[in-house]
Structures are given as structure tokens and as C-alpha cells.
Amino acid sequence: MKSVIGKNLKSLRVANGYNQENVADFIGINRSTYSNYESGEREAPLDVLEKAATLFGCELSLLFEEDVNAVKSMLACAFRADNLDDEDMKEVADFKNIVMNYLKMEKLLAK
View 1 (spheres, helix red, strand yellow):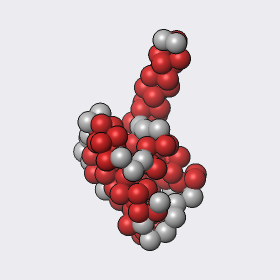
View 2: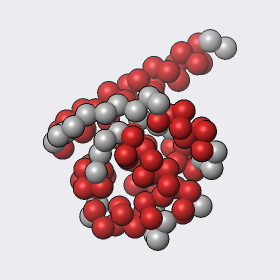
View 3: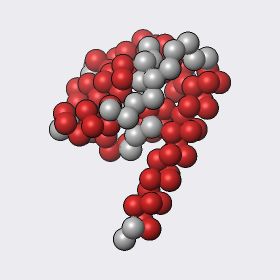
View 4: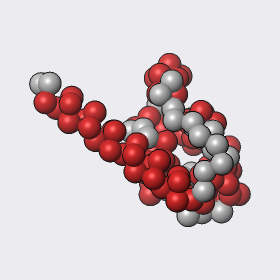
């Protein structure tokens, strides 16, 4: 499972135009630690995965997804921006969280 999570972390990071340093800073860990999660060498703790999912604007469960097509469908909606500082990344993550919550509410109200 570590390799699946690592592959998905990398795919989401690249699709969003972030480097490992950006993501590690946002999560609050060293870049080398984050690199070990992406490579599948270390198992990422739940709090790290939750922060990464928030940054990438996806459900936490997507990080565990083995179906490449499910991950690719999420990548089509990736928000890309260059030269973001720490505050910009926090604002992007907050915005993605608002969108995710809106989509959940829409889904619930449609039932």
C-alpha cells in the first residue's frame, strides 16, 4: 500500500505543479521525509495524508486508490499555479476545501 500511496502523492503533486519542497513545507515536514513517502520507502502517517489531501483538493480515500483511471480523473481538475509562497499554498488549499465541501453538500442535497 505504501507504493500505491506514494505513486498517488507524486501524481497529484506533479499535476498541481508543486515540488516536493512546497508540499513538505505545507505539511510541516522535511523534504527528504516527504520524498520517502512518495517513493514508498516510508509509510506516511494519517495526519500527513490528510494535509496532503487538503492541499491537493481531493478526498483522502483517493490517496489509497489503486485504480489509475480514478486518480487520472481527479488529475483533470488539478489547479496549477507557479511560484506560490507558503501563504498562497494555504489559500489554495482553503479554496479547494471550500469547493470539496460544496460538492459534498450538492451530492447530499441531490438525494
